[in-house]
Image 1 (cartoon, rainbow, N blue to C red):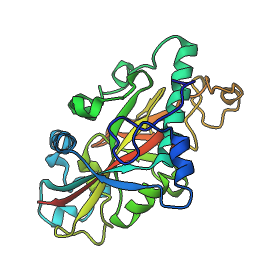
Image 2: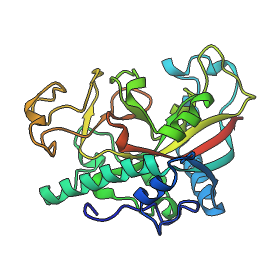
Image 3: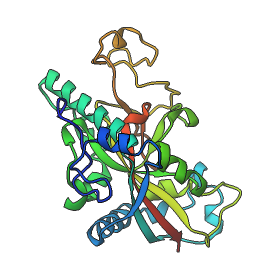
Length: 283
């Protein structure tokens, strides 16, 4: 995988896999390289099922980030549309990162520990437990590649589709990273500003591929600027970054504590590919 010419996934339709990402990117220099593609019935059913099976109605309006939602009287969401983002430029960065992680696995001669194999975690990732075979195609589990939900306001969706995520624009509890969740209920909290909650207008969230790699699990908030050292757990440790492969540092952070939802954070935008836009309304 590390040595191969990277091509779009087999199920992409506008940027078919007969050309490499480099060929597609050269072809799209003078035009918009991002296309929103209607998904197949099979994909839509898979994503609708995933949303339904990971939705947690009991947490609607509960918690600091959901302020205002308790007043608009809803307990579920209805999916109106699902589109696939085909963006060769952003995807190339992501699949290059995945190939480098696979190379790292080859060096270690072992897969990265799964979240449920890490003693202080509360178990496996819900989205991966509930994902059917349609969405499992092409996923590389040895580097902890998973689908997760990302919440954002409607006005930012096109920027993310065109440019990918940008960790520099975030400032969450665990620092300037890209945040995702295993439940769409968590992401729905960020679909509109806290002072402008409403039940009528269409909302959007993203189903993103995320490369968690080697995971650091913590139940303590810490404003990381990058994943911490595997030895001292300090994100400012220089020793862990002397090795060109980054073997001394984690790749991601999972916040797994007393909160209502676990959060999954990476600090490098190339570890995420925003693959699906889910349009929905609250019901």
